[in-house]
Image (cartoon, rainbow, N blue to C red; front, top):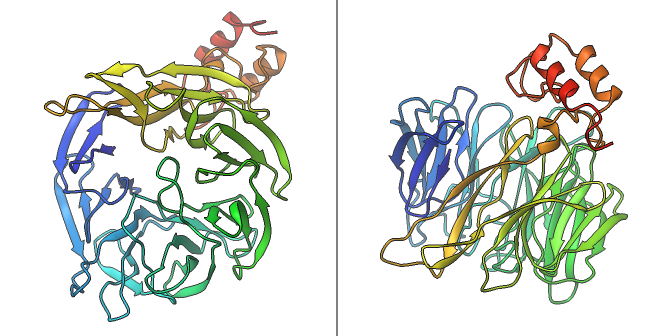
Length: 417
């Protein structure tokens, strides 16, 4: 599922074929998909639920607390791990706006909380709500959003209970981010529940912060070197935090804040996202402003460049990656949207890409060590007969580990060694 800036939602088949188009209205955030395939999108102050099969409207819910402030969705809508839908609209001190709220899959309001201080953001840029556990080892039970509330308070990070009510809010450290990498603050949650966000203030500079999920206390803070233009963080399944900064630097940090590696790419980096299998880190790259961009895949272990897809010029303009990349559940394929800078304004368009993010997996390198050998063969044999999505031993991605996967490993045996 994807939508464009005009508010059209597109449903595509795995091979890129068009299934349906739905005119939702000016979007406020990326689509989110429920367990039953329902697609949820936000437009101004309304959450719309679209039938994932037919592309027809199931229901819509609007924040009708209109007044001097016209409420707009400033985070979400995002489907939570419990299957309910969560979103945040702008609020004012005079009573407009629901703030954070939750809906059932049928569109009924579960709860709302205006926030203390009131949630507020100068414009929205499509951030997602993230979820995590208040205590390590528990199931996710709260959600996080961060806003620049200069109209009502300093910039804050909020935690709300998934069952309703605010758990805590703390000053975030500043959120005046660059238009290149992060116009609005996007938190991320690690495997142990720690909340990460990048911040900027004139006094502290550009920082990566780690926050205790139980009470909002600061666990550690790293001042990024060099600073300037910091991306939102992303966290791998092993707890490593990735962030782009100073346009051309890509860094990885351990869960204790120690830097594991840093590379200088030489171009303008955007939206670093690590795959769910932790085998590739993908980011947008532009050699310099005023040139066509690319999508690049890096080794999450050391930052080594693994592959590059050049985007080139289209429609008289420079094509660049312009949305946060998204991976398939098994991490094999990465999807991203582009924009064309300086294109023909009489016939504007953009592209959606699907790229094999981990080609080595298609070639039989099951464990990702760069060599197709006995270890990969044994991995497939031990998993033989298993079914489901996301299995690295399912080399061809058909949902079952069988003879076909075994043959791919055998035909590529010794490759890369």
